[in-house]
Length: 104
Image (cartoon, rainbow, N blue to C red):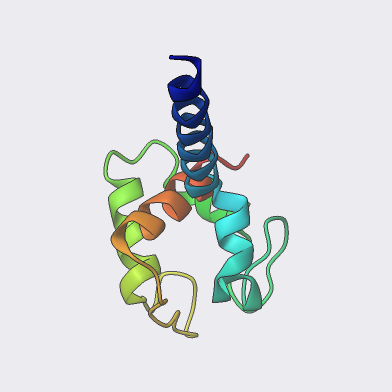
């Protein structure tokens, strides 16, 4: 019985680590092209992510809208420079949007 528990605990630990990594918006942000145009605290090519969070604070559909903008791109929300579509899955776009909106 003891021999069965060790692989079971190892599997549970591996799944926990994978879930934690998937929910880590900061790490996902750094692994995608987002950081080429955005920073957390100050405007670069695109707006600071804290400014994006402040602009969308309290909006009921903010996460879904931001996730769509991340995935499909957008233009005109922050000036004339368009934001291109990003190579992210729907889940990654939602994780990034949730993380951005959590920034203060």
